Image (cartoon, rainbow, N blue to C red; front, side, top):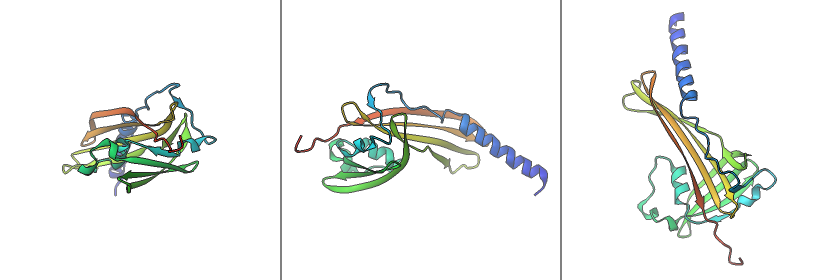
Length: 185
């Protein structure tokens, strides 16, 4: 490989990296000042519990995969959340008493939430390398003052025509899932 080819490849990778990290794909989480309990490594066990109507979080974790039509009713999905340690939580999604999905999330407690590390992705279209895209996704999980689960998500991405960014988009949302009361409550 001659020097000019190496220079072109490095320049291309630099343009892609700068575009990805300076695009709208670095969206901040929704601000919920004083609406939620500030979780940290001392009180993280407060997350443990069962939560109803968790189909939204299940859909978020499923990504592009569609949910079965039997799960379209929001009341049909219950989330059992268990903190494993200070850096991991386990999510068991149940429908009609059967576990339909299990997820283990790794992250850290920061700014009052359990925050997963950003997930980066590259979407290759059938027109690659002419048209392609990259994106980032963030997820934070916390507790409201009413002891319900709240999950905040943000995402963004940028589309490229060859090496030139030409379209960017992103969004953020916050959702609350009600904690199920124990029989003794």
